[in-house]
Length: 286
Length: 296
Image (cartoon, rainbow over all chains, first blue to last red; front, side):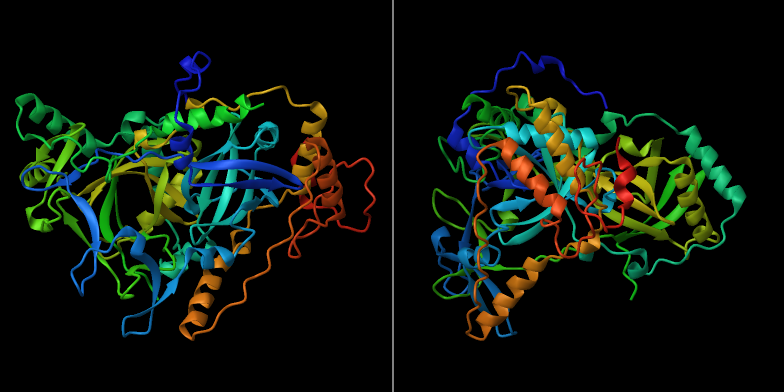
């Protein structure tokens, strides 16, 4: 797929506050490949789509989400929230601390050991869940570049499991244009089979029907996906409505200085810039 | 036990009409924790409050707004949002058929199995399987559009074995392509290191077998919870000793390669690692791997 590659060289790494950029990383740890260690950061590769709306009070003040205890009605501050798991029916819970969960898989919580490399195109679509980018951390990006180079050249994806935030992930690591990407995969137990769903077995099909369908498929054949087809049509309509109302000055409210700002405010730092910065950052230090 | 269909529709293109049912192809098996109040150990609930006054605003009174500029909102009325909703429809319209590589996994969001809606019309089941076969024979995927539960979707209609699958796709702006980013640069890699890394990679070559990976951790979390419920503690698994840090990348590659050749690094379940044109290979009696062929 042709993608805009224009300005690539001209663009310097964007200026970014390293603290804020690091904060956007999901995870930091080490990819290992044999005895080679590659310190990395993990960033999402997907942006939140669509137009995000906030909940407002009738007078237009942006609202904040708060937790409260249904028994007392009192607000429970963030620091007093703990994680629990319900046992039995009488509403009893056991408390589970983050450290206890991390201790269940100490090595998997900071290291991703790539023990198998499989043909990159051999993973069935229904396994793919979500995409992330790896960016080099540490002092040198050499091992990162080396792994990316050989994976790309050989058309392989590395497979591994690791634990992040109380959940084990199966991932496939791909290299594309010198950049390492991770795709979380579903475990086999999460994927259903046609038999489990109860789909009927294939009967004898009518040759003429197959041929008629093949003709119809040819009729609508195209070599490429039209990027416009992936547009968010609802989001576009929403944008138009917002633009029209703004123009008319209808429903526009000033929430006042700092009213709820930053609460569930969206994407404090642009993900694309963070990625560009992070991919470059190990270079600078060497 | 058969699963329940979550939606019914009709695949349409050209003069073709195939009635289908939609089934979730995946199930999430996350361990469901709840947020509790530390003091009372009771689950907490959420409410929306006006941060200025601290008062709760009941959901029925809330409005939705778009922050056009910092602190400036455009309020959208429920009726206005309602009008933007798509018309309900049962059609799964196929706009074009493209080579499978055109829609790669970065766009995939959620997969669904389609099954024939046999009750809807005669021959629906045969048509369903004929369409799956036709798609497989032409090696094409359909770009599909449909509206389900008041939401518009774009998806890939693809054959999966004898069956049809519909994978919902992400919208255009949601995927950051690697091609929009610049790869980390630096001094050229040493040819020798590249070569060793390639050898190491081929020693670790294998097929993708999903059944090999279990979510062991989920089991351990549930075990921990069961033990805690009985007031017991679980012995924490011992952390693996830290690996010795080789002093250079070249040394690390060399040592890894030696290890891989000895098969030391291979997990117990794994078959013999592929021995690929290793010049001084000492291992003998291992059967040649099926993967020997794959590269040149």
